[in-house]
Length: 173
Image 1 (cartoon, rainbow, N blue to C red):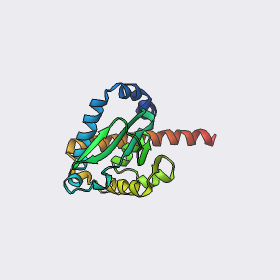
Image 2 (tube, rainbow, N blue to C red; image 1 turned 90 degrees about the vertical axis):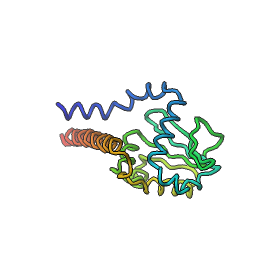
Image 3 (tube, rainbow, N blue to C red; image 1 turned 120 degrees about the vertical axis):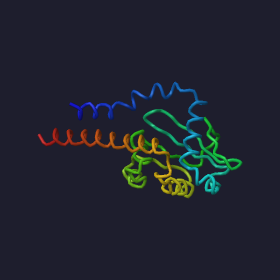
Image 4 (cartoon, rainbow, N blue to C red; image 1 turned 135 degrees about the vertical axis):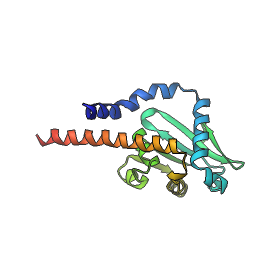
């Protein structure tokens, strides 16, 4: 019963979150993104590791939620915009897969080759972004954030595993 409920939540949560996510004003999304990025990339920002993104735009899209943001680097700070003239590189994926990447439960390269993570545009810039993502130390995150991220990834993983196990059982008959 619990397993079935978890499977349903994992399967349908993105479609349920889509409307509230789209109705959230961009100013709120921007504030959350900037604070989240500043927390996750605190060391990288202090070290100037985002200079490669200066005068360039990274598009991040959560396809199943219908959300997208454009990120750049200006005056030693990250910038989040609702639109840009032309992005240089684009990362897009489904919500659950992006949670897996953030929690280190899935490797971006694996998801890319499974076509679950799309990286389009300037290949060199995309590689720099991916390497910067790979350099994040989860232990540097505040304990509550790390806990929520890891628990969410585990919940999603179990829900997806149960879904695939149920599908295999159906296919076996």
